Length: 389
Ligand code: NIG
Ligand code: FE
Image (cartoon, rainbow, N blue to C red; front, side, top):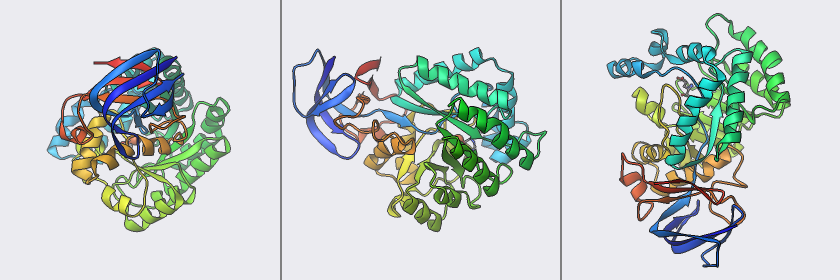
């Protein structure tokens, strides 16, 4: 099976811009760039902009329990912690998710994933973390596994130690995660990554390290929700254990940035979260200037309900002073790095999967420019059109 995409006005391959070019695809892989060849199928890109599919490398897409009731609290100026104290936050979603059937969780997530695909996401990471007991966490991971099997995009599972249940004590719950949950999840290969919400009131640096080291024994690679509300050593831990990524990083200092850069830890920034929480944004500019590899993701969750990576790119440009090409690279190639998948996805290079987007704009500068509508015209996953406007 071969496919030629011709008349590409502008191409961003993950590194640089090319004009007036074409892409030749064979058996789902990119086989040639810039040479028009005979193909079984031809798509005329109509001189539009083509780029790699978005890699949404940090989401909580599987959950039950919408939190739209928190919006007015946010407008009143309540903080994330105050909202949690008022009965919203993670524990609200945990209650709902524990009581939801696998069928319901799957059906609702499926709808979200379809919307993500329509907005250009071709690879998606999803975390557990709204179960907080062994059976409910495994229920979530099984749903993620089924979604990956049934959907045309790649879905990467992460086990997330997200919070301490209200009836538990932090040390004991950490022990339960290490001794009960991780061995079973590890043996059943239900997660590629293990992530921890390292934060005051959640898991301490020591507890996070214990969890991530135990998960490593079972082949799960470490990720950390770090420095979101307090800079208490979580990004330092990420550098120390060479985590695949440190995520959020709203409060990260320059010293920590240098540690992340030299350890090769990807900084995954999630600007839609401070957007809905009315907080300051991570200092992406300073991270990039310190040599940190910056990735972008939606953080899709019941607090921050966006399925749209284009919106994240727009926030990154205007609110974090990332340049359009830096933001597009962060949302594709660098996000693939955060998932340790950059050998097969994230850029348009010969030998990689043909995951790409034809956008309904003439050039990359229109992605941050034209706000509030879906700019995707066609989504191609492994050489197959999976969405068309
Ligand atoms: O990544 N920061 C912690 N966890 C999620 C939010 C979870 C929630 O509020 O339901 C996040 O933003
Ligand atoms: Fe998150």
